[in-house]
Image (cartoon, rainbow, N blue to C red):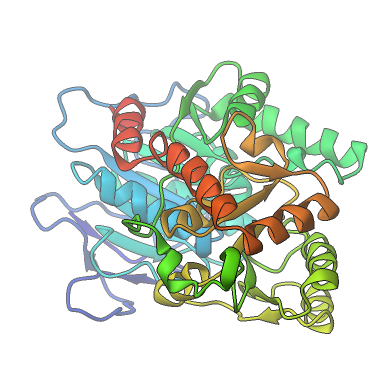
Length: 407
C-alpha cells in the first residue's frame, strides 16, 4: 500500500538506520498492491468505510495480522515506554504510531510513524485520515487527549482507550473540575469498544464511566531487565547495614501530578537525621516553578535522561520514592523494583492490593526511608515485596492480556 503524505503531518519510515522526514509518498507496506488515495487536506476527510454513527468494524477473525494505530500526544517517558513494550510483546500484529512528544519512536518497533499536526481539530481529523488510509483494524488511544482525538469522530476501526491514569483520580482537583472530566469521559466512552486499565481502581472507574465497553486489565511490565541477585555489594554499607552514600530518587516529569512538594517535604525530614542524604529528581522540567522549588531544596533535577542513565541513577539509589498524586501504574516504580532498589510509594489507589510499601504522608515516608537506609534487613524485606509484585506484572502476563485485547 502506498500512502500519500498527509499535509501537516510529518512522517518517517524507519528503514535506513536514520529518521527521515518525507514530503513525498511513503511506502508503508510494500507487500500490498493497492494504492490508497488520501486527500491532501483534512477538510471533509473521512476514514475508509466510515459512516456517520454506523457500527465500527470489528477485528477480522480470519486476518493473519491485525493493523493497530497507536495514538498519543505525550510520547514521552512512561507512555512512550509502555507503547513500545506493547508493540514488542505483540509482534504478530502490525503497529503504527501517530504521535507528538519528546521521545523518538525508534527505527524498528513500528511499521510507520507520523507526527500529529498542531491543534485539536487538526489532530482529530488526522486520526480519522490516517486510520482510514492504513485500513487500521484497531485505533489504540493512549492518555486522555489522545482519547479525545480518537473518539470525537466515528471511526471504522475498533477503538481502544487507555487513560494511563484517569485525571478524575486527582483528589486535589476541585469537585466541579472532576465532574467535568467524568462527564467528558462518559460521553467519549460511547465510542470506546474497549478500555485498557492498569489497576483494580482504574477497572472500577472504567466500568462506571464506560459500561458498554470491554474492560481489559493489561498489566504494565518493567522496561529494564530484572537484576539477578542482591545488589547489596554495590551499596557499600557501613557497619550494621547503614548505607555510606545514600540517595533518594524520584522519576517523572516535574509537574503538579507528580507532586514535587511532597517529595521535598519527605527529603527535608530525612535530612534532619541524615544531612548527607542526596536527593535526585529524574525527569523533564515541565513546570519551571516546581523545578525551582526542587532546586531550592537542594534536589538535583536531571531533566530528561535516557534508559542507560535511568538504570545507572536508580540502580545506585538507596531509596526510590514515588510521590505522584494519581497514576495508572507507573513504569518507573516497576523499573526501580527490577533494579532491586528499595522502593516506597505514596498511598494512592493505583497501588491498592499490591505488596508495595505504601506511605500516606511525608513524615511516614521519611521514617520508612531512614529505616531502609540504615538496615540491610529492611532493604531485603522491601525487595522481597517488590519481587512478589513482578511475578504478576510480567511480560508473560502482558502478552496474555494483549492477546485478549487484540484478538
